[in-house]
Image 1 (tube, rainbow, N blue to C red):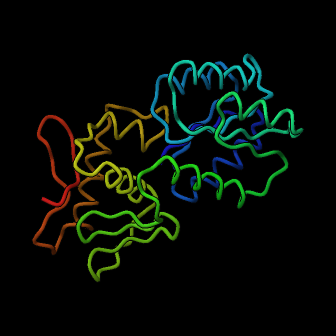
Image 2 (image 1 turned 120 degrees about the vertical axis):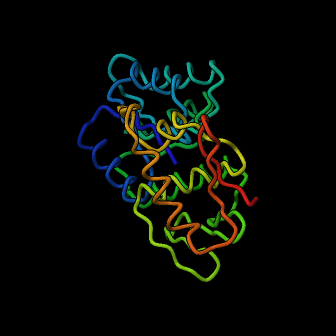
Image 3 (image 1 turned 45 degrees about the horizontal axis):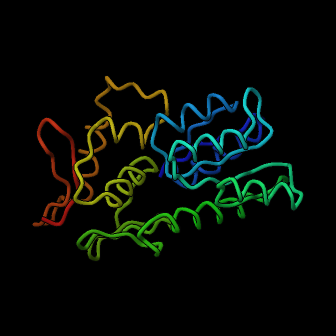
Length: 223
């Protein structure tokens, strides 16, 4: 799943980005409020982690703008401003959760997963299509009795497809969701990863789950 991190402290941003990517998330980073607001308004994210004390535009103003523009993406405020008044203001403006610095990464990760589950129709750590099961916490994949080993990027792509099962995903949609903000849209890397997934997921099974929609993109479905 794809997360936008709006955080001006580059060491903190690097720490969070690295930790989330190790958990198979795709992470875009903005170092000021104006850039973060623009990215949130123009790209699709599953979650936004937002600092308050940002250059160019305050995080609370970013929050107000996003909600005014009908961006309903879950937003987790992560800030050093930890008074009760600060928390109440952030939550009243439309934030879904509030975590103060310093923080333990394990707690940040737990809150991220809780917000993502709350926003999803899937309330379990297991998501599936037909006999294919993916555990988003343990990062395991199996089809029937077969355990399937995937790289972090393959796992992220498969998770995105399963969460959108039956929906046709264009190459642009996949690029924006699985790769970072600077992805080269002229690359054939998406087709390469789809071929890898097909080999691992469908090879040896009579029922194929990953399908090509010619001239459009790809989908995963039971039939």
